[in-house]
Length: 378
Image (cartoon, rainbow, N blue to C red; front, top):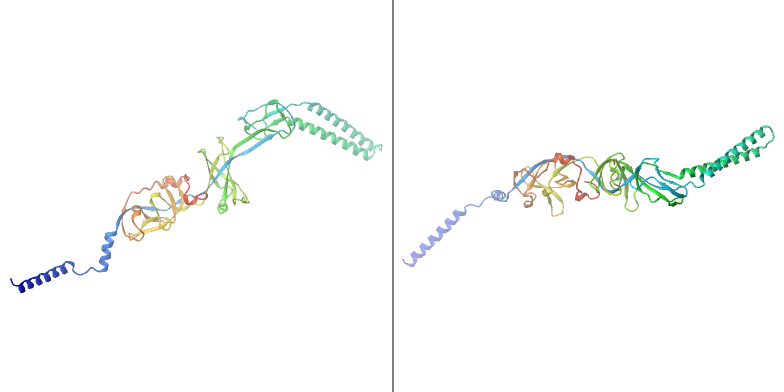
């Protein structure tokens, strides 16, 4: 083959290759077809669960401690030596029961003397009045006799009260918490005899922040959870009218029946119910965090695209959280939410989800403090 024939064959081969390549690629796809293909390739399968809003009870929660309804420190009102002790620490007493008794010493003779003085002063006063009626006594003398009678009566009343004070009795029913006095001790006026506690009902005291105090009302039911694990039901019986100058909080007291005699002075969590709120009960694993730091839920809209809904934690439970800020009904992404972004198309697949029994959860009192509502509300 000569050189000319070789060049012609090479040219034809090149043209054939170009033609074949142009046929393989064909006409370029339209922009719409390209976008559709991209969507089909990018759509990720996610698992979704349909949820509905439910009314949930909110609680205003504050930390405090407990006090006895009556906390009485008995003190001697007359001096004397203790000759009888009728109770021990831990004993339960009724109002009027004897606690201890002091020695009488010379009190009985002094009372007898006072009674005699009253009798004499009474006779003198009657005589003065009779003589005045007969014209033999002046009004001044009658007034002096009356004054002497009143002084004698006052002396008798004083010694009678002193004798009564030698017998120290319980002013209210309760338990003897302390009893420092013993037989043989000498008590001066004002010395402590015993400490008496009446812890039924129990008083739980909490300090409520100034921004929340308007939501607390007298007579409102409340729940008291003690550090011992015991739970009492009561009602708000006192709300301070003035805030503490340092903390700007208001003292609130909840009175709760305590028939079992639970101890006082322990830490307590006071929970006051607020108006119900429409919320959704979700698993904490379903929550997402945006780059801005906003906590929310990723859901799927009617067009099967991802939507991010910011939420606020209303109340926390052991097995989930109540959140507000969502539509009444929605499909929450429960599996795969960490791999999709708002606006992206997805292929939703119905799943059983991880949602606990919300009917039972809605009726339970709170058991854990919501992170976003510490010291106030959940």
